[in-house]
Length: 322
Ligand SMILES: Nc1ncnc2c1ncn2[C@@H]1O[C@H](COP(=O)(O)OP(=O)(O)OP(=O)(O)O)[C@@H](O)[C@H]1O
Ligand SMILES: [Mg+2]
Image (cartoon, rainbow, N blue to C red; front, side, top):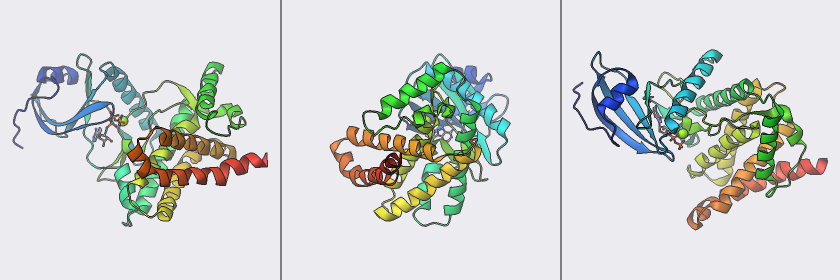
């Protein structure tokens, strides 16, 4: 492949890259660039002096420069953890290098399709529904293992989780303290675990690309409901009729919870599921409160419908039973 030199973006020089990767990088060809909420990403084809780096690399430049070391360390740790689990067809990216001065991390480019994209396509009737369901279950399994690996070990961590849950839920929902006593369900929070952080490769591997950056302890429900809430937004973009939309959403959500439940000691109990519903309802309410007029027009019907569904099928029913 002919490689032409292209100036690197955002003041990153070839020397910076060479330093980050501990080898001399001769040239870098920009292939694409995109922005996320918290960083700018560049896909490059790099050529090193010793050999060609055959796979493309992604440079992730955090908007806050001091995030890079945390990101790098966390990516190494989660990759080691995922390797130790030896889950078939599940992998985690390992970083290739990091530049503290410029605040970026270099990692391999993963060729494939985001799980979020696969989910959206699968509910438009293609034949990949069963495959997508398996990946979603795997995603649930991984989160389950993560929480199991980092459970709360002292009272301070449990208090931290309890106050987090109470401040989130108390003002908006009929908060039930029963599950707040469920202290063995406290673990280190992954923080931002969602289908967009999982890529399905051509050889059918699920690859985790974004490590956990949070050090806080929360009830496991927070990470679980965050993933479910994300699923809801994927379906919003499929333009399915409302009833089909919920059918697909309910199916995928159930598979995620099944994967999670499989690794949790004693599985997910009714009270756990209620807590997940509470947290999901909280996220929906917060979204409806915060969104702009135009977003509200778009989200109002599906989100309020889902909220009502959560409230009528679970929240009020369960609280009445007590
Ligand atoms: N190594 C990679 N290979 C292929 N695609 C990637 C890679 N890293 C990131 N991406 C793509 O870029 C998107 C954003 O990446 P990422 O989530 O790592 O950025 P972020 O700054 O954490 O964004 P956000 O704050 O929205 O989560 C991903 O959803 C994925 O589609
Ligand atoms: Mg991310």
